[in-house]
Length: 167
Image 1 (cartoon, one colour):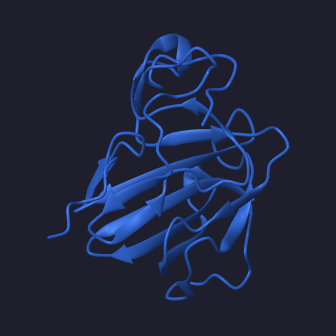
Image 2 (tube, rainbow, N blue to C red; image 1 turned 45 degrees about the vertical axis):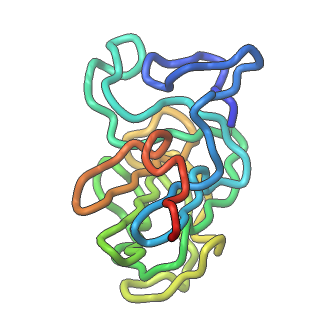
């Protein structure tokens, strides 16, 4: 995954080609492997954690912002059940998936949501759930992606970088 042109203060170490050095394709969780980047195509515009005033007003950012001016599809990071699909204040249009084992993912600022997604609907890993947008409090077309484990928000770039050992 590459960082967007204006590298923010909270996206971690960037390699010589503009790549995020922490990136691996999957997040290993108690619910199984999840996609770390559930977009069709995007660059990392903001990471998890404290954003300085130059990159977002001096506040905590609870997920990853994955940007693409052209938009594109958003996919379920893993199989699970829909717990929410619709508008949610500053997040705009959201989809939230419960993957089991107290693991959830949230996808925010969607332009539109797959119309079959209702609370309780089952989704498969990689299934299209919506399209990237800028609904709610957004300054550009992007996906705000959150991962929570045991009720705590975790950094989707850092958490679960290695598969658990199987004995």
